[in-house]
Amino acid sequence: MVVMIKVIVAGFKGRMGKTTVQMVNENQDFELAAVYDPRATESNLNEINEYQALDVPVYSELQQIKSAGLDVWVDFTSPASVFANVKFALEQRISPVIGTTGLTDEQVGELQRLAKEKKVGGLIAPNFGISAVLLMQFAQQAAKYLPDVEIIEMHHNNKLDAPSGTALNTAKMIAKVRKEKVQGNPDEKETLPGARGADYQGMKIHSVRLPGYVAHEQVLFGGLGEALTIRQDSFDRISFMSGVAVAISKIKNYDELFVGLEHIL
Ligand SMILES: NC(=O)C1=CN([C@@H]2O[C@H](COP(=O)(O)OP(=O)(O)OC[C@H]3O[C@@H](n4cnc5c(N)ncnc54)[C@H](OP(=O)(O)O)[C@@H]3O)[C@@H](O)[C@H]2O)C=CC1
Ligand SMILES: O=C(O)C1=N[C@H](C(=O)O)C[C@H](O)C1
Image (tube, rainbow, N blue to C red):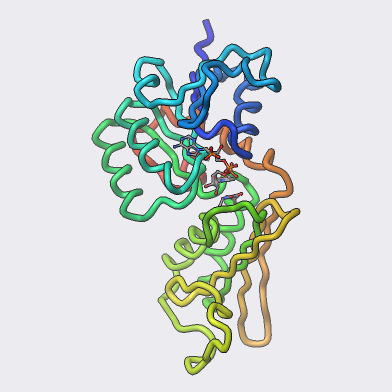
């Protein structure tokens, strides 16, 4: 008998949540066992027009989830809610697969300690798209030779957090291989505040928000008489789904919480 992985999708009404519900439902190895949103008024997905054929419980309170026998908690919610959701999942020994951005370093540390204590596998992926995972790795490699770098991330205009989780993670990965340095003219002055962007250990990060965009990033390196630009584009949220599927399939095999899809590929 094939045992399917029982998945709950938190944030199921959102842009990523909807795409994930469809992917999980269509994957023969996964069972869409529940969905969660504290503001949901439905008790079953079949009450929603587009999901009439699906008999899946909708939970709006964490207490309802305790006895649901779930394997994996996929979280695409909001920076304000992800920590409490993931803490709950780990306490219930449900493996979290987290796409939501905005967790602080302290929160990540606390969740990693809890995962170890509970011996539960989990993943925080700043980006589930393979093009973004590769961009971050290539950028880290390039920064060893070209340490002057600026990051431009471009997203749809409904995004809540800035900079994007991917841009911040790119900067953190680069910071591991280069010394902190001041870039640009040490005497430069912003005549319009914010003109030089945000600063992460001397790296400038610029956030663009425009309708029509989905998720895009450029990492620009400058050297003596030369430059390198690395760019990735997610034109559609489907680009994140193969990464989410891999994470759901594998995450139960681990007993710690990783940051970065590359750790389980
Ligand atoms: N790692 C990756 O590859 C990717 C990550 N993301 C990240 O995923 C997150 C979600 O993005 P997106 O789908 O565009 O955002 P949306 O705003 O479209 O969706 C978020 C959903 O979560 C719901 N929600 C809010 N609070 C809770 C809660 N406590 N529990 C469950 N659900 C809740 C919201 O409901 P309501 O509107 O009622 O508040 C909303 O339906 C963001 O942090 C984004 O950066 C996005 C794309 C890819
Ligand atoms: O909000 C989004 O859309 C995205 N969020 C993630 C991020 O902040 O990096 C991943 C991707 O860029 C899409």
